[in-house]
Structure formats: C-alpha cells, structure tokens
Image 1 (cartoon, rainbow, N blue to C red):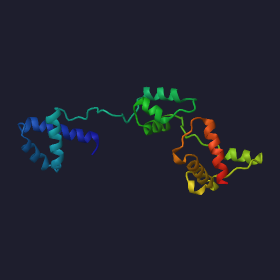
Image 2: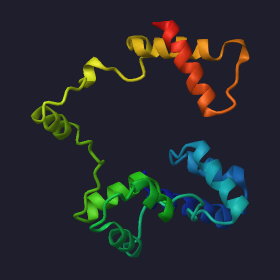
Image 3: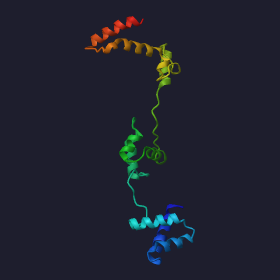
Length: 186
C-alpha cells in the first residue's frame, strides 16, 4: 500500500467515524472489517485520529531523507574543486546522513567523492629504483607483536630498566639506565 493509499484509507475511516458511525469506534471497526481492512490497521488509524486530531503524516524530528535543491547547491559549492572534504563532515553540517550526501552527489551531480588512496605502490617502486632496502607488508604484519622479535627485546629492556619501581628524575638518568641494562641483555 502506497503512502497516498494509506492516507486515503485513513481519511475514509475518520470520515466514517465522525459522520456515519456517530463517533462509535466499534461500529467503525466492524464496517471496515467487512471491507477486508485489518482490525489492527483500523484501530491504529482511529487511535492516531483521537490522539492528534489528524491522520496525515506530519514532519518528524530527525535527519531528513532528502536534500532540497538549494541545500544541494550549497554542498556542491563547498565540495567543488577541493580536496580533503569529508562526506561525514558535510553530512554533519547539513544535518543528514553521510549516505544521503553520497547518494545525492552521485545521482544529481557529476561530482564523485572518493576515498583517498595510499600511494604505496608508487613509493615501493621509487624505493626499488633507488635500491633502498625495505620490508614488504606481507613480511611485516601489523599489530602482531609475537611476530616481531624486537618487541620482545624492548619488553625485556623495559622490565630491567624499571625493576624495583625505579623512576627517572631526568632524561640523562633514563638514558644511562637504558645503556647499562642494554649491555646486560646482549
């Protein structure tokens, strides 16, 4: 059932309730049940009418689903020929969801906002050209301390430096303590 059909049905039920049924809910419900309208729907419409005095959908609070042409022109003006513009920031300023911004820019304009891509391939190619040694990503997994032995060494050094609740008074004292314990690790 479309919105227009729902509103027409609501109008019919309310008109019948006020005019023909002499404001009797039971009579109204029985009449529309015979027309194969679900009982719950009839009660819902009547409750809404009795509570608000109107059956049409009224504007609700929250983010709008659509952008006006004026608002879209403002967004296009703020986005055009600029880098570093975030859809989420635009959405927050416009009081809509970021997907609404994306959808409207995609459908109603020629602007395409894309995620910034890392230039890792070009950097790797440049390092290879200059013969600079580096560890490729698959050999150096992120956030896996167990796979990097240096993390174990740093952990052991930290334990040795700060054993017995030792605290550094200044940077020089810390540096001396680290150098002293570093020799003991090797």
